[in-house]
Length: 304
Image 1: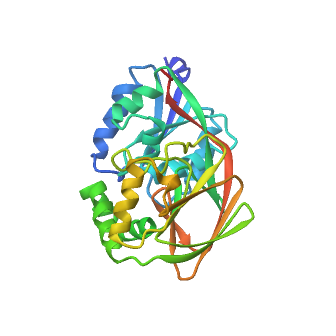
Image 2: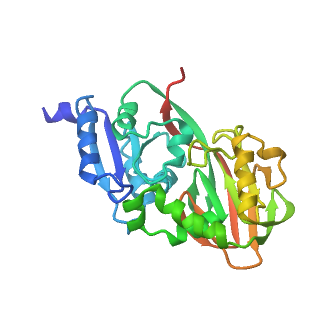
């Protein structure tokens, strides 16, 4: 009997029990309801916030599981995916965070049990690009400006209590009071100057709010990223910017400039500014970002 159990395909799950608003026990029960009847054995590693997740994932990948799953928010997904560099093991995503933007971008179900079921049903894998800062990789976006200030000022307790409303509440406060910043951006060796409220280096188009996108032609598996510079300076400017986004006119408007990047982006600013990556604080500027094509295989729904 023990030998038969060992021969079952194995799923290794990295679970952030404090992500999102759903009770952790309900998520654990979802794992059991989906994976065991499907004929999989699974192991759950629950994060504490103090571990080196890259090392945990690398050790798990050495055991050759069928898939390594990140069950958490976008930050947890980025940390798990960083440990799968140069690994043939695919990444599975069970989005249980606050924003879950990467899952939206890839068409992964936001319902926990549907996301689990995808992993044990017919699917395909997509090789997505990455943004690397030091030894850490991010797979959605790196932002400096309003979004990084919101990430800095939103506590974990607020995110668990209010969900996305926590970001919206903090964001409204910064939109009203935030003054544009002068940035210097070195993009693939070309220097750009900008006075902007927000600079985002995006690997996918989804903004994570009401289906909005930076642009309809930004994709996480195309070998490039886009540097999106938002030059809005007032609430009226932000309203016009939102209107451009809704009409898919971002690339022609004067308040948003979008520049493609294929290798490296370096950013400095005239005053201290924090940078965030996939919803977690990275550091203060300056920052150097390397673009890594086809960095990790991710389980996504089958086409059609």
